[in-house]
Length: 314
Image 1: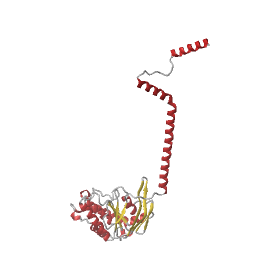
Image 2 (image 1 turned 120 degrees about the horizontal axis):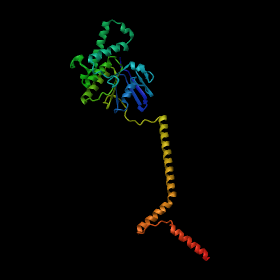
Image 3 (image 1 turned 90 degrees about the horizontal axis):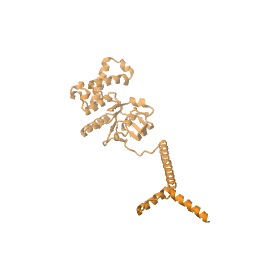
Image 4 (image 1 turned 30 degrees about the horizontal axis):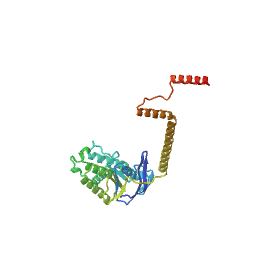
């Protein structure tokens, strides 16, 4: 299958925890090498899955080979394939290289082609399977004879670069127009990364459009960035932000009023106590014993006697 063109305008996906990616713009011709550049966790894998029809975008539009996203997901899946995507295209470490290749070829023949292909003679079908496998391995640069046990080599015994090449070969068996490859620089040396980019470049020269996720895109690629962007808020986000700001201001005003009320209450109720405290402090500083301002019982009796005497004299 020939490569397909990929375009996107304001493409975005919002999940329960916020935006995975947003505001993506893209215009790539068939046979282009598209690099999705960004740090881990910036939504680059989500963008890869959305552009290959595996996730449904919630904002904007995109087209892949004439199929429009997010409405025509099934049509995009028919012309695209994935490789090296954790949790999606994981290789079984217990299976051999040959078992992976035969399994993918059988699945592709059963579900990837028309039903009339199953009516062909068995010898023709077997020859077609062998041709597809050999073509995919040659395009991925994986030589089975160079492996420790050939096709019987277990996946667990492959080097990282060999495992990536096998994953790419499995995806190419279906002859996709768009190939999506995730994390091509994961735990690879600089030399190995160079080999991977050379491999992807050779695929685009053969006509396949390649969409690759990486930390830093090389020159000569159609680059799409998923890093931090100052995208404008939509109406819903703006309303939520204004609501949070208004609630915060109202809370601050209530706290200020309550604080002033507490201060006023303390000032009015504590005046006698404050006066007594000042008197006690002054007496202490002068060295005199502290006396209570309230009259004692004997002093009250003397005051009564003086009052009676004054009355009798009058």
